[in-house]
Amino acid sequence: MTRPLPLRLILALAAVMLLPACRPPAPAPAAPAPPALVVILTVDQLKADYLSRFDGQWRHGMRRLLEHGAVFADTRFPYLNTVTCAGHATIATGSVPATHGVILNAWYRRTLGRQASCTHDETVTTVPYDGAPEGERHSAAMLQVPTIGDRLRDRTPGSRVVTLSLKPRSAIMLGGHQPTAVTWFGSGRGWATSSAFADAPVPEVAAWVAAHPVDRFRTETWERSLGPGDYAMPDDGAGERALPGWTAEFPHPLAGAPGTPEDQFYELWQASPYADEYLGAMAAGLVESMGLGRQDTPDYLGVSFSSLDLIGHNFGPDSQEVQDALVRLDRTLGTLFNDLDRLVGPDRWVVALSSDHGVSPVPEARRLAGLDAGRIPTRVVGAAVDAALATVLGPGPHVARVDYTEVYLTDETRARLTASPDAPDAITAALEAIRQIPGIEAAFESRTIAGARQDADPLVRAAAHSHHPGQSGDLVAIPRPYWFFVTGPTAESGSAATHGTHHDYDVAVPLIFMGAPFAPGRYDEPASPADLAPTLAATIDLPMPGVDGRVLERARRR
Ligand SMILES: [Zn+2]
Image (cartoon, rainbow, N blue to C red; front, side, top):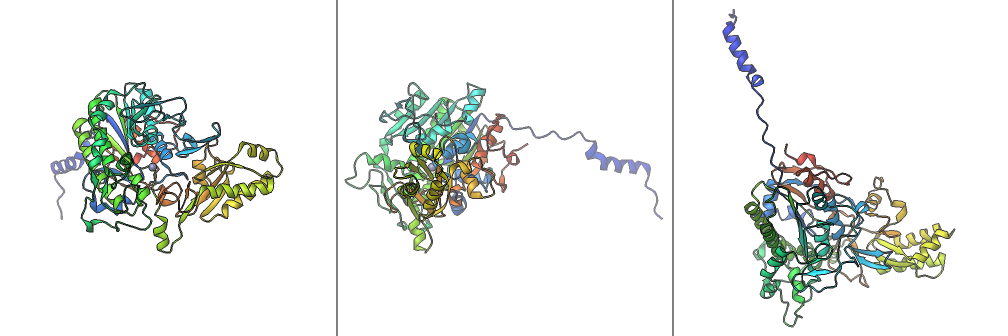
């Protein structure tokens, strides 16, 4: 028989077994201090699948993001008009175009009676740094909600909001209504800001630009940075459209071929990786000279790298140029992250990286493979609608303008439709005429989709997320997969590839957060670039009520 355990032994065993429960709870790991600098990086036209397609080549910044960041691998814009201005506005405000009002890069303004860019504002003037021509008029007036930077400055006016990009629309939408310094490459000739944001050049930006003249790059040539066998595609792929001064093949001299006009250098520099390297260095330079991330209240830095977009439009997403631009962007990001560690301190800054849209394949390349693809001139849409409306209403013109998917009718035609018993027939005829155009998937009357963000039809949902009653057209024309709109006269016009639809290659983009407040890993829950700003703002306890996006709580370290 077994002997009962002595009482002393029982107590000792019990003490051991109970030990963990009796111990005072281990102190929770100290919550990370709030970041002193929040950074938004956008890479213009960085489609989601580039990250995996080129996974083997990431060594620097992209590698650091993928290994140490919270990666939302299923991120899509929920709306139709996937273009730069709308995308940057969505990223910075946490809301979609139906809410923030920036529906396209440029659209017909009924109040002006003409098309104007998303940043056009008659009431302001250019403030040049180094020779950008005066006369451009940019502000954030069309942006109808605050950005993360606006909310930050409302809470702590001492916080600095600094944004920069080659493109005014990207820098301005990342910044918002009251940035400290917003800088872009004006008219493609020099750095500039606007009287909307500063009465005079910002001293730190002026000093950096003066010390780093872009003209220094005139003698550079963009060569491949990898070995010839390391590129996935041939150098002269189907449908590549080189900028004037270049051919479709490497090398690409920034001054252009002999005989290229001198001013063309500025276009070629912007469409080279040198411009993104410049922006990365400029960002670090301003962090240093302005002391960003070194005061009691958090600062915000927004950088939009534009060159990949210009390269992708001209050479297409499957080009050696795009792959090489990404190799070099990886280095640019790595250098910037190292600079932020040095200038702000490791774990004192937090970053979110995303993109404003993806990009379509080049139609010619798909056609060679026997697949359906093409370009739709917007003037074909306008002519079809004009003709259809004329059969019911009499001679036009009935169409004021077509911008991408948006068909704007003239004020006179709108008034006649409002009063006419034939209005339903006229609209039906116009929509049917649009649907007959090669490459069109669907057409709607805009007012029937307004507010239909929860509709069962994903196409209607996407269009509704882009629809803003005060800004959108009267009819919406939606292209089929691998078709896109061009403003030129024929189906051969326009760039090699573009974006601006609800199709997956346009809406799927990366979304990565990195820094002490985030738990690294891959997150498969669906996310939107509209989630970027509220999620980043949560790291500095900055609430963003009323936005369409949400805080991606799962990625936050607690
Ligand atoms: Zn863009």
